[in-house]
Length: 49
Image (cartoon, rainbow, N blue to C red; front, side):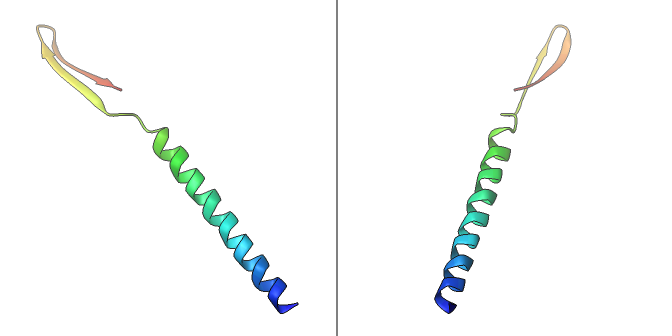
């Protein structure tokens, strides 16, 4: 019984790590690439990419 408890702990820890990593990757991928700033005859223009 004791070996089974350790196995459940390891599997649970792996599931938590994989879920956390997936959430982190999703968050990083959904960030905008940055901003583009240009100065022309009409003044300053800022666009988010």
